Structure formats: structure tokens, C-alpha cells
Image (tube, rainbow, N blue to C red; front, top):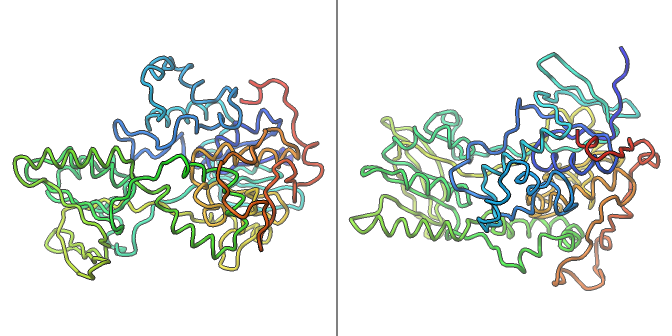
Length: 462
């Protein structure tokens, strides 16, 4: 049996960031393939509520902020599907969530994505990474000189939820809300736990569907229901400038800032918060509103009693403990990164901090040989720009340039009016500002020569 062809890169996971990488890699002459364990395109299907939209403008698509002329932009998708004029007339920068999901599927059809390829093993033979995936036709091994890890995050449940209730149909993570919606609406009392956009959307949806005898509680540990901070000076923090500043800080400072920054990306759209209040106000005209909102309230435990769920709650400010009985609970408690098990086979090639987290360099690398990179696994090293869709094209430009060994995509170095650190880079720690054109640390000298030159743009997008 002949050895597999060696790709320039294998990207594991077909979320927006790796799709963006593949879209930008092709025109740069890189031979890449994306492996995805699921059978078909999928992006947060459990939260495709009618009318919900992205919290970033449509320009934060896969490619536009790197190359506005790219044929896989969101506007190109609208044109191809006959919707560009309705979108223009709508005069709204924020794409509907359902339409964005269809855009991702449309782009994936035009990219080298292989679905139903669940990666199970990873090795390095001295010259390339050997990636083994389980497929419907049996195991398959592919080879590449570089890896891009975009395996995404997983739903997180609070420790307060006992293992016996984690698979109970009455306890639903927001990621699975839509399939459980009808069952939840049939409950008399429902609790929503969480403080972010997903919690607000679920609460609003349940409130709209609440009947005369139904009651919805919204519980958050935060001292108030925080709106997403979206002022323009704050948006400047999603920039190469701020990443330069943040990555140069000691890890202890980065961790402290990371905790403070949660409100910058985990808050609720202000219009939605106002709409919820208006809904509650209208519902209160004829009597008590069918809802209770509790702030500074932590979920301490859940138990079953007489066919109902009993939630133990602790108020973080006055220390009070109380219990409330509900028929169902929706946990909008976010997502967390879990390092894939298949990385065990190349552990000696990866860089970690003393606490075991990835030691991600400024150019998103975790490989000791400059050949393994991460997507949205660098929150602790690069700050809250890690999950931001608007920074995806920037990160992928950096990755593509690193693999090419040249600046194929022009990468902005400074866009902010603000100074985030000591002017001139005169700090007591950390490197100078990142130079993406010069960032070839760890990239083999022959990397550019080993890429596959493609002159036809459409061919590069197959």
C-alpha cells in the first residue's frame, strides 16, 4: 500500500474558524484538507431561534476582513442565493443566525471538507503527521506537515448538577434547547440558569410561549443582567494592537484580565434586555408577570423530590439560602475547551504552561517545531479575541502566512486610536509588537517550496 500524499496542513474540525482557514489557504497555494467527525455541516442547531442574529456585523464572515474580494464572502453567498437585494433593503449589519449557518454550509460545499471523518489517532513519523480517522468505509490515514486544531468547545454543566440528573430530559443545556422546546413549554415552572445571550434568548422564548399557568425563572450569578459592552472604544480591543499588548503580559496578569473581560463577550444584547422588560411590563397589566428574575444567585444543587426538581440557591451578597421547585431547568452555562484525546500520540511535540494549559505563541502555535496551531483555544494567552468571529480572518491570515513563509495576506499591525500599553513597547516583560511578515519561527525553510502552487482561484476552492 502506497504512503498517503502529504498535505501542507490538515485542519481538524469544520467550525467557522477552520472553514475560514481553508478558504484563505487555497488562494495562497496551500494544499489543505479539513476533517470533521459529524456527517454534515452544523453550527449551534439547538439555538436557531426565529429572528435571532449574530452579535457581530456580517463583515465578520470567513474571509472579508482578510480579502474583501474573496468569492466565499457572506455577500457572495447572498448574491449566489438571490438574497443580496433583500439584505440591502433590510439595512441591518447583523446577519440572522439561521442565514449565517446556511452561509457556512454553502462555503463548506466549496471547500476541501471531509465529513464523517472522526479523528481517532495522531502520530508523527519524523517527517509528517499521520492522522487516522474513523469513516463509514473504515479507518483512513492522511498525512500533513502541519496541523490546525479547531475542535471547538463543549457544553458545560455546573458542578451543582449531579451525575444522576445530567441525562435527565428535564435538565437541558441551552445547546439542545430547540429539540426540547415543546417539552419545556409544557412544564408549569421552568428555570433558566445563566447570564449571557443564550440565557436571555431562551428566557425570552419561554416567556413568549408561557401560558396562563406557567412561570419562568431566570437565575444569574452576576449582580445584574449585564448588557454586552459594544462601544467603539471597547471594540478597538478586538484588534492586533490589543493582542500584542495582552500576549506580552505575564500569565498571572492575563488570567486576571481574562476574568474581568467576560462582560465584553458574554453579556446580553441591550435591545433584547429592553424587549424582555417591555414584555414583562405588558404582562403585568392584568396581574403578576409570569416570571421571576434573580440576580447574584448561584445554583448550589439540584435534587429530585416528588417528581419535581428542587433547586438550592445561594445569594452571593446577603448569603441567603433558598429553594425553588421547578418542572424543568435550562442550563445556559456556556462551553469549555477540552483538549482532544488523540493528541496523546504527539504530546512530546506540544508546548504547555506549567499548569497544563497550552503555551500558545503570538502566532497561535503550540508546536515545539512550529507546525501545530490552535483556533479558539487561546483565551488564556490571547484574551477575549479568541472566540470572536470578527478576529477569525485575522488569525487565519497569520496562520496562512506562517505556513507560506511569506506575507500572502496583508495583516494589519495597528488599527486602534488607543495605546494599550507603554508607548514604544518599553515594558519590563514580553516581546516587542508582533510582526506577522517576519513570523516564521519554527516553520521549516522548505515549507514554501513544498506548497502546491495553484493559479486558478476556482481550482483552489474545490
